[in-house]
Image (tube, rainbow, N blue to C red; front, top):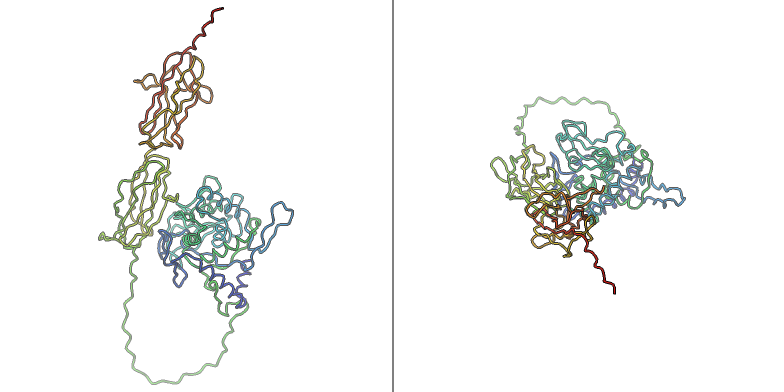
Length: 573
């Protein structure tokens, strides 16, 4: 149990020393270039587009809010037996038990990310480690049947008193506070991060930070940003630090990750063990340190012995000393973010791409002060806005980037989806309420400029029959295969009249009804399109089938309906 383990760490220098060695080993594994200040917070080697800040939205999932510092037992948990073996479930250390719904949410999130972002290699045990450190596994699994916490889990008010100062961004919708933000739910997302990182993990049509399925899936996507591969330790460390920018936090999460990797077991909801020590507890020692003797259980300081009062000797009057000169109060210089007056375009150019392609141009903005001078080391957030499936590289719709020495921030490359049309990429300064800078981007549909039949067989049929061969065409664009191009097929009246014919060959729909125009057709990855079977009515003659695609490719195919030739009689011998 967490509380017992916390006391166990405080009994004897030997146990403390062992814990210190374990944490030191974990510290040695962090990403290259990571250094810390005297509070254990990372100061260099930050994740892409992230750094710590004392005020404003600091670019982390939790706003660097409070977390639990309890460490796992030094002995590994006992693994669970094989399901259906008839052996009673192993319990091992109580800390190895994870509430049923919470464990299920972590595993489902891993399964989802394995399909959507296979290169991330997210282990569910990492979600469990973060869930343990952030909320004690949703307060020991106090969730309802859908995975929603029975009562809100809220972090401290982020008003700058011991934590970052983050003014309200959700009008209190998630955290109930309309003045300042607070971390919310079992994975402790701040509202401004949840607004873009939230996911629907239980398919109920809502993105609720208080639901463990939604929160676990959101945490997985958050950790997998920027194409991170979590099987690479340095990249895993970067992802964890982007969740809460503290080396002590990183070490604590890694220790629980290794503990859970050695074995866990399921426990009923509401019966999980609860941690007891917070990162902001004044009496909680840092991992690997020994608290003062007065903080040990049962070891209270003794009051000083009382002594009789004495009368001080009478001193002769003295001349009052000259008071020291008054020192004027010092003023804190503004941060770079506080000096930003506006955003300026950095020469992004026209943003256009064909569906499925990566935009050749990147969005560049500059942060400038009132004198139009560049401001370096300011975080700029790029957000994709509009009805589009375009994303940044890595599949996200939001990216935060630090301006360089010239005050320029370059957004990650945009990747066009399959939906054609216009959308907007909005740049805003993190931590300041300033007008955003919008960039219009356009996705054009995939195109073909040439269509050709894949066979030259004549297409003939008898009245009332069906054509033996189906029409198949291949689309190309500038000589290359044109895959996933939209197409339409119509039985037209004539070469000069593209209106739909009211007689002659036709297709049939699922109910067997006559159809002479087919829409929503698409070539396959090889540029091929095979049309459904064609059927003839009783009208004879030559008819035309016209196939057109996005981009202007057109092909007209002749169809002949004629009576079968009569068999000639052989004269009798």
